[in-house]
Image (cartoon, rainbow, N blue to C red; front, side):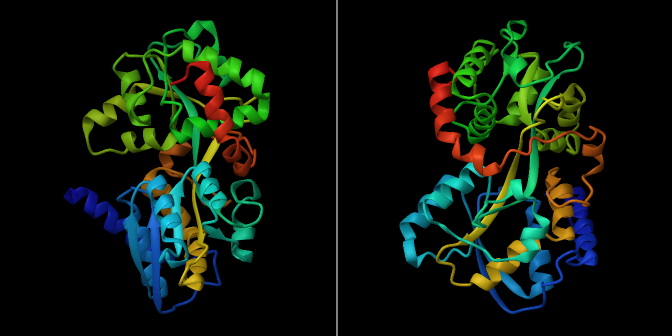
Length: 346
């Protein structure tokens, strides 16, 4: 970590600590430990965890790995799993963990009040704590009239110009799952086929790779989560910032259902040895201070109403969200993948 990064992290941690656990009056100093399984691979989360320990006295023992690896590990560990909380990205993975019996329901007025209904499991098995909008990014200097909907990405006009992650990526599955909920299976498959025919290259890499490819001229449009662009804009590397300067953003479907949003979230493990500490941690993640850190630390949108998004996000403007239940598009993931495979989206 560079000196500048360390300084920013220290300043941000100080700000969060000074803010305290605003908005979550049930939190109080305690003793004990928390075993956290996390697939959030963001270095900036360190201050988030340090703040929790500072405020509660609870030590966090963290195991980090890929989401699928952690889910398989918890399944293998069974009743002997030491995990108290599973924290991961994408509602599809949260739903996958729930279907495997890895969560227990959480009775919390704090979470019920602060996390919007469409961003939590209806039976309180998991909750979203940060949002990311999946948008259309395009080359500012090469695209005069960008598509305004996800559906328009399949139009002939964009043949050979669209960049995307593969169908095996869960972000792609959740987006398609939301379209499946809106359009039904036949129209969704027709859309996926048209989109696949418009790919500038075979899908590969992550969202940042798609953004860089637009800047490099390999394609004109990309499907990406907003926070990837935010991290390029805020990067210390001038080459990253130069890439970001070439990218413009469309929030799709503003005249209809709104832009698809996904979440980072978590739940209390079914066999948590420290369930009270686990519940406290989830409530902490819904506090104003933690919400502000999600926003400032990793360029994400807070889920709690009234917590300001980072300044760079505010420059993109407000947008209408698709308030489809995250559970719905997550449960559509398997069908979405089959549709994409049949459509040639590899």
